[in-house]
Length: 610
Image 1 (cartoon, helix red, strand yellow):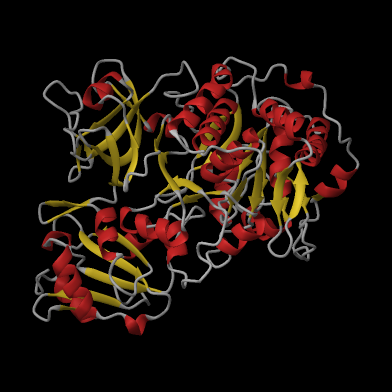
Image 2 (cartoon, rainbow, N blue to C red):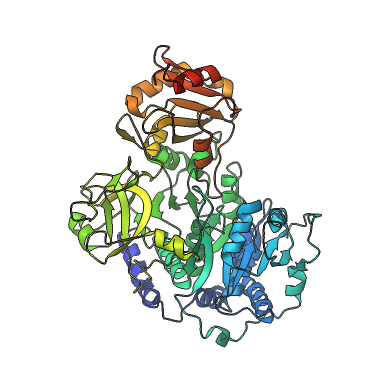
């Protein structure tokens, strides 16, 4: 049943949980989990395994594993507010470890498994953790960071459940986490060990994606986790009989909070995939009997570019929720794979807001009630942003200028520290980074707003549409160019799998010129420069047409499949520094022509007009 009456009933049923979300309250993520254990102890809590018949771990078995971790934590002196770094791929031990830490009030710093060297060291130092629990599958990435650390953490090694060989470079000081846990009791510690723990206390440190630099550790409280769990389970209509397939990394917000939390709250099964695989995705859904999944970034585009199969619609998945399903593929994705409900959402790891599009309106990321009046009385505004000066516009009184309906601007969300369901900004482990996200005296003296760093537009009906990241939108020939909108347009050109659009500096020219990195799955000889030129000419205004094209064999993405742009922007369009084929738009030839060192020199010298 998926009607408004059912949704209203679920919201009413969630009110008792919502009332507990007071930052000074005592309801925690551990309490939420233990309630599900009491209600659904013998039901499967986690399904896992990369092939064959799924392996199952019941809620009771997961609880026993978490209790052993809790006793380990107590024995090592861990209490309320003490951080422990957790570096592990998606597997049951990941879930049991953070829950065990939560049972004693410790904080799990969820480390991105893709980080290496200095970036890994930065994440560990930012967490201030003196202990790190690392899966053997991630040990090489951890050891690559040790030489960059001033103080070495105590390493606890969690072995592969698949029986894979342990890496040879195991630090001599590393402890055997599994062997230690095997000696621990499976009964829970006395609940009094978290008597001092509060709903507003940190549960996780979750790191930002790092698309624009080193990742920052966002503070995620028990209350925020509970809010996400409540919202996700209600909006996705999760019941104990459901199976939520998770191919997203548990170290990030979408998988670790929205999906994991909503499944645990509902008593549903969480089916884990170690890492996202477009090829195995639907086979996994069939194998696990999945009824729901979450997506992010270019996730859906990867699935859509798989070769069609006769059984594409042969599965039990009814609904999918996530962010980043672009309008150009929305209907095609939904129809090809037969997904009844698509719920697009918008939020940020560290943000104080979340929006949901439960109506299936293509392209929208959510809706505000009450139109313009609702926005003014509520906690959301879009403010005009000067792309050229890279700053918010201010009027003669020094205040921000609210956008008109349909006008793009930076989305701002009012900060309020009173409750957990909206407005509370918990910041980062860095006070400086926290302050940089706060906009003060924006519309009236003394107000404070969370800066999303995103350009959105809100139409007259209150629908929100994502436009671009600030810094991605650039100015060329006096016009603002949205990289997101250009990428969506180019993605429809035949033969392309992924498109990454960004602006590059051209010496002697104002603004930034458009450049498109195109992924064609290695089929570079299939790229037709003349046909691409004709397509661009027909679909984009001259100022938005990419001047440069770079052919790539694969995209550079984050762990949550967001496209990275910083390195591409820095590399620019120098054929002597870039091994990928480069092209430049040539209006005389009505084609994109190969970009040589000589041609680049002529462009920089002003001898070649662009």
